[in-house]
Amino acid sequence: MTGILAQSKGAAGEQLAADYLQGRGLTLIERNFRVRGGEIDLICRDGRTTVFVEVRLRSRGNFGGAAASITAAKQARLILAARHWLLRHGETPCRFDCILLDGLEPQNIEWLRNAFSAD
Image (cartoon, rainbow, N blue to C red; front, side):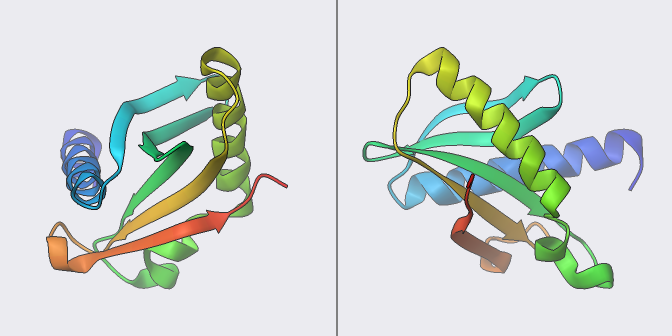
């Protein structure tokens, strides 16, 4: 994917993920939170828990698919951004979830709750 096409597919994937999570009772708080060194695709609330969500869209299964693309370096960038968000909005219990999309069809969604921790 290149340029604008990749951005539009990414935005469509994030919208699909947001709709999916809201359909399962989570409340969307913020999209695309960015700080120097990190970004979080979706920030949701699940009861009293803040949920930081990474959305991964892979159109091909090469290199392990969507789950394999969430490397330790990517996790560190997500954790950095989450710490900044919590400093601005107040400490709450939190977790890191991933929504894995193999294509843009709702039946291809895999939700990994507590995909990794900040420890």
